Length: 267
Ligand code: BEZ
Image (cartoon, rainbow, N blue to C red):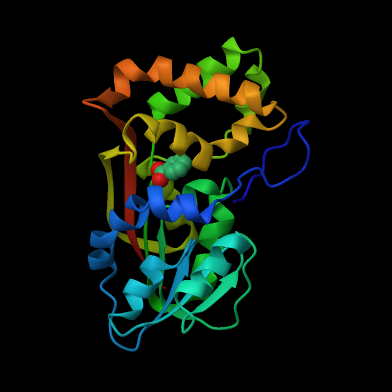
């Protein structure tokens, strides 16, 4: 996904996606958002944009309510997989900052994607641009304090291994409700719902859950580190976090979710 850090690391897209691992071990990403669909409340015939659609499972769920949905994701490999699963749905490669669409939408929906983009103003502006007057923006993503324990563990292990410089590769944006509400209102949105909730999330695969999660979602921190060394650092992260996040044979990630409903209302 998007990475906009300015540093001396090579200019590459750091987040690598493995769609098989994403779907088999991290299906909670879309499963947990099923009640977000209730907040979206798609209507028959509505045009909806699913921003950061991943492998398209939620996009498909929205279509089953009778809406016409386009899914966008900036990872070509995710879009390829989404096409394979759901050939009748339109999926496009594009990111929250640069996507260009001529059509407008009744709603923009986004689950677990916007914390990957560190330029929220640009994303919000783009969402405003593609919404019809009166259209709604319904989103959930990581909010202030999200995975704080995990991030601390990663930082401590990087420091201990002599790779403290890699901490600057943190790719995530986790705003408070107040901060995000301000950005939305500055664009002109009317907020009708905003919340920040703890969402402790069980990682699949018992003992291996946290290692899988780190390899899937936090690989960007390991740019330039030899693979053997990466494995040692990941083991160290696990040792540091075990007393806090490992309970009865399961890793529990300290997720916190921000949820927003906002309308494009010109007053
Ligand atoms: C999240 O869904 O909160 C999340 C997932 C991967 C990395 C960071 C946050």
